[in-house]
Image (tube, rainbow, N blue to C red):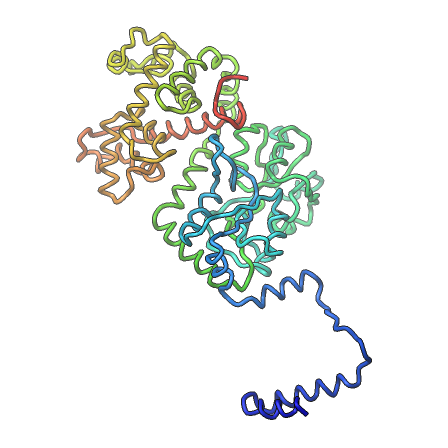
Length: 485
């Protein structure tokens, strides 16, 4: 009686349809056996998805701000997230997610997984807020998750040992041993090639598989172009043999029905891109990897063993005394002279650091062919170049100083002035590398104090030094360059 009394009162608010529905449910329940428990016909994954779908839009963004922490799911790769030479966190995904967290005024927690599959499964289980792991946007993933703005495009390559012949036709894919990382985006691409077969592995990521290809432990794998370009500098025997997909898009992934978080990511990204921060990140991590010469790389690695041991202690000591990175100083010297103390250019620069006579004299060098004198003088001169950009943060400071060492202080100052006139940032290498080549164009250099300069040369100079520096660090291990093992 009490129930029906309440029901009559509530019909004023909710109407008779609800009343009829409730009565019907009660009458139906009277016909059921006693002690029958309710049964869910949803599988566990479906239940998780239903819970996510029922979350109010925007609740995740509010939760992030309330807890003061953004949880990022990622993977340990040179193209995503890793510890750098100074044991500091680095990587494109790290830089970008840290910037986004700063925009929300929250801290960041990183959960690192062994594979793309594990990252996606963790996001599915709500173990983090966003997945930032070099994830490719595709229809299968879009059916379950939402994506943020595209921050990079890549190609997907079939990568085999360089001794294997190039594949010109998709019919030649038949019979290849191809092993790919489980649940990677590459699988969706190769499904459109019925003439080929492949094996998925949960034990290795793509970086591991590329190393196995180089060692001929497996025949082929599939990699995105960015990771391939990074790894071929170390595993010189790998080579792309076929292009499976072009213009694959990378973006962060979040669970659906988080519209406010998705909008916050989009708003941040627009500012990030407009402020040239995205270009800075791409240059920072990938600006030097496009230049690869198989013969030059092997020659360099050979000279690491045969020439570098004679001079490595000088590089280390001279660099430390001038607040320089030892490996970068050694790499610079290799670019200058290939570690040849007798090197000489047509313009008269000489020695292992290729010093001009006036510079050598100003630094107290009595014999430019003396490797020790030349290295210490070169380090002092490079330190002077760094003082020109003393207010700039690393690594831009080192790269700008290298460019100044190559092109000369006067031309470098001209380039900085030109950058300001063109609304570019003279303290960012990503922007200065666009300005420096203009020094060779009359429409620009005619109004500059020091006039014409071969502006492309410092850009190539810095790019090659960065490449040699990376090879040195890879060769000597994770720590700072400290001589031949």
